[in-house]
Image (cartoon, rainbow, N blue to C red; front, top):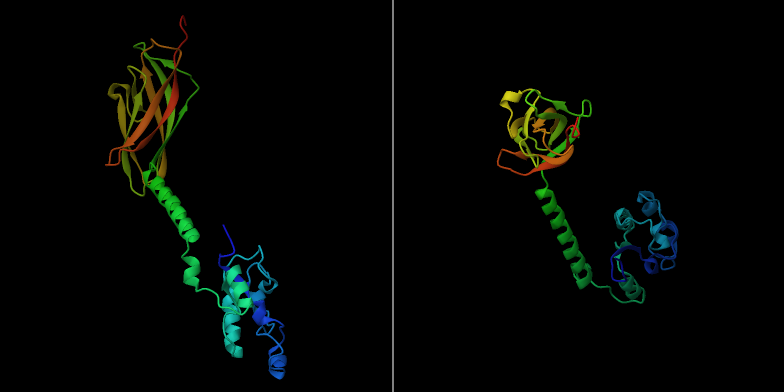
Length: 255
């Protein structure tokens, strides 16, 4: 993503070299460059590189060396910008005695505008995806012991453990229902078979996971293993929810 027109933290060696202490530079005017070899740029670098050795992969473009160098230049009475943002093209131009382009023109070019548009589109897509994400999560586990129970009226009951996760920072009421299992009714361990129906309502605390034991009863006539869906949805204006496909077990024919 970088090219010769990309801004880099650059040490302007054509201005700073040869480098030596302030005392020697003052004693021999014009014999040395602006760099006083104070090593402040190295001291403040979080990755420990010496930017005066040229562009390096370890540079994270934090610009701490720029601030440190500008402070030293102000103290010794020399112009700022010995270490500064600069493109490779502008560095070559300045080294030859020319003048580099303004930073604004460097930034406002087709390549950077295209990059800006691409990253803006990616960010907008991520925000949209996050906004559409359901705040209700459901996980269902079939209890295997016993695999099923035959009730007095001939229906078959399976037991399940539901884990409902409310990701909102407020309590919510949700509905839990079954589909794909004809004649099925459900109830929880807090209810009874007499009050069973095709859906139940539950109250979920804010930002928590609620574990519920669920009983599902269906007619004995049907396949020994039948897949169906247990789903949940909000009852508070946000109907988005979640579902899980689970198995309903019956006795084998002839048992």
